[in-house]
Amino acid sequence: MESQIATSLNLKYHPVAILWTDEKPKNALQFKKGKWGCVMWLFANAAKGQICVFDRETYGCWGGGVGLGFGNQYINFPGGIECFYRFLSDGNKKWKTGQRVAQEIKNFVRKDFLEDFLNGERYKKSFELVKKFVEELPIIDIPQKYVVFKPLRDVDLNKEEPKVIVFLVNPDQLSALITLANYNREGNENVIIPWAAGCQTIGVLAYKEAKSKTPRAIVGLTDISARRNIRRQLDKDSLSFAIPLKMFQEMEENLKHSFLQRPTWKALKV
Image 1 (cartoon, helix red, strand yellow):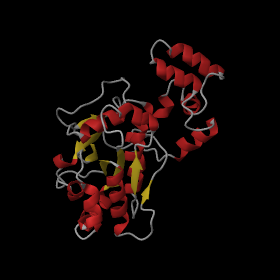
Image 2 (cartoon, one colour):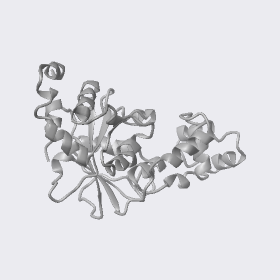
Image 3 (cartoon, rainbow, N blue to C red):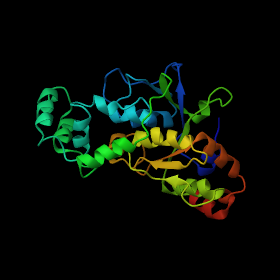
């Protein structure tokens, strides 16, 4: 499927469709079983034209497993979920259990991970706030075996039904998408920017919106860890814009008579 929006925005990268399936696509990129990796690495590859696939043994990292929809993988974090709560806040260094786990894993993990494990990524101020964040995530365990990232051009809507379509955009293109998302809607909050991992803003948070009667789009790649991980693959100013399929189709239909045909946008598009 070709997107009129992508053409009108003059996108550099392919829109990416996210699908659930029990059939593994041939010749797809996939992490090795048990190996660490950032989901957004493969997302960047999909945006460049490659089909990518994940399953319950190849989701890359614990947050990635959550983001893709493979259940609460934080329980499998080294030392358990309480170590994760401290990892995302002020670290495990002052906690006896955390100290013990750090000794057990120090020869098997990257130095930067161990440093963060001990001293914390400090994305939340406290253990309690991270616990609340995890509890409020719309964690699901999807019924299918695989999550697939596929360039939208390769999707046949007569045979496949993506859950979400994700655009990679610069600030001008993001502005246009936000405007188009609100073009035929009441209210002015039809796009949200939640704090979450990069994969969670295109995955479980977008899946949740897809179930809504009036789904909203989600701006992502505001996760600084994800931005660091993909900085060699994508442009520095790239952000993600995840649109549930129903909303994407609505936006495609509204494009023809919108501001995208007017001089203001055309001046920015140059």
